[in-house]
Image 1 (cartoon, one colour):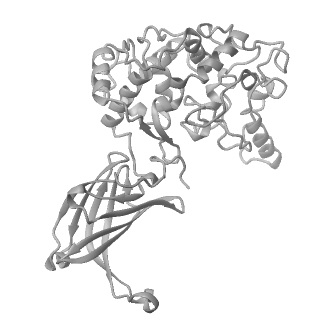
Image 2 (cartoon, helix red, strand yellow; image 1 turned 30 degrees about the vertical axis):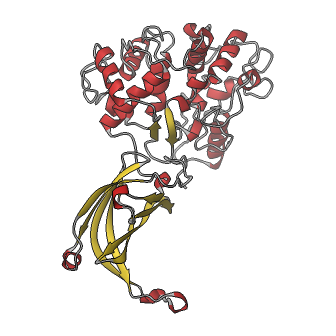
Image 3 (spheres, one colour; image 1 turned 135 degrees about the vertical axis):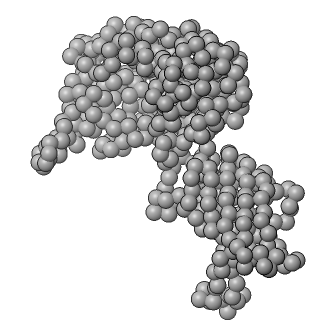
Length: 443
């Protein structure tokens, strides 16, 4: 557990102080004081800045009553940055690994959840008692007995369930949210630019670490300017360095960890209650300001785009109309795999090259390329007749969902019959595969 000073250093290491952002106003990006308060309440409603009056009696870990502890910084639960968050004695998780498959998604836009209501917050008559949170934890012994394993599993699930925050429910005689807190956290959760969709085009928890696609309206150059102007008082001028109020390895190393863009997006936008980093201190940034910052650091740190099933489709180059690539990215036994065909020509005749590869490193795919012959048309086709001849090697790289580059190098045998090295850019502006890019699931 952090003491107050170390918590301050930790939070400064995440965001920095001062972050006096210049706002880029969006029509919907003018939160009321209640929305701003609701953001604090969602983060930790027991804090004074959140309108709270301290921890409930007997509770030592605020995580067992915090909204974000199960629903995540991005409101997406295990379908977002908290996909691998595990429970321990000091905290619940977002449902990963327990026996309760109830969705923790509460995002009205990205998650498609219904508008949030007060009853959803209070869970009157249906939520657990506070004591059933921390008190339900049972550590596994070594070696575990059957009874110990059952107690661990039961407590693991129970502690992850929503507490009853109503004034007349299981915890009504203790500290619960005030009506004002309930109203403001409801307003915050329904505020459009507080939704994760204001920052992220998609969140892909199937990748490890979680893959984030920043909204396509973000401006990395603007993000770099914000950082250079407003953040270097506390942070190193180089986000890869940790000489300022930075985590080990710097801000880029921090953001490269699992799910940290979700946390950054909330704290950089709304501040941290009962710490020096209030929303006013960091310049009341808009969602656009935060997205700009994240895009710049994502590109700088290489923690951004990665190959995924949403890249499936037909890719081509307008200057070379008449040839192109048909790509299919999918999971085979949990491993992301590319199947591809390149329809092209040699000596005036149509020619097909084929690819199958699992050598996928971030946004780049290394491929062995083959050419086929030998089989017959129609009823005479026999797969045993197909000859799979090595053609050479290649690399496909994708900086984003709509652009790519291909580089192909034929082997000596193929060069002897007329093939040469080939490199050019690709796009897929003709057709949409209908698969989200990046896709939200891995199987």
